[in-house]
Image (cartoon, rainbow, N blue to C red; front, side, top):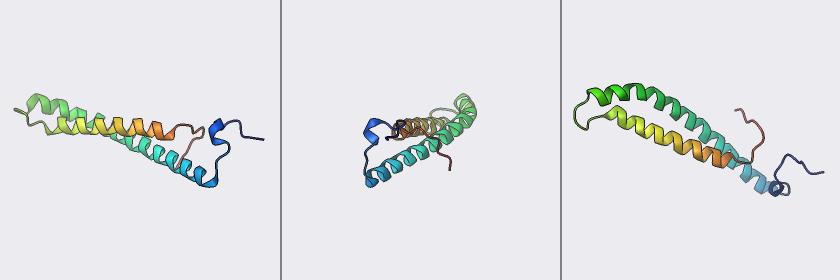
Length: 94
């Protein structure tokens, strides 16, 4: 009997296709972890970015630029992690 928890398109995969699917989902989990770490760093750097924007003269706002970069990386990794992890109905912990 087929496993009804699996989507229909994943029920009759070859072993090579299953390995590829597992690699994709593990990469998605890795991207989610990296995305959440970037989000934490972005939140902490935003504390200094506000002070940097207020007190730095001209266009010299390095902490603000780092905050923008880490925020963009967080969004990139989180969206791609969710996209790559799709279809998984189990919790992966490693």
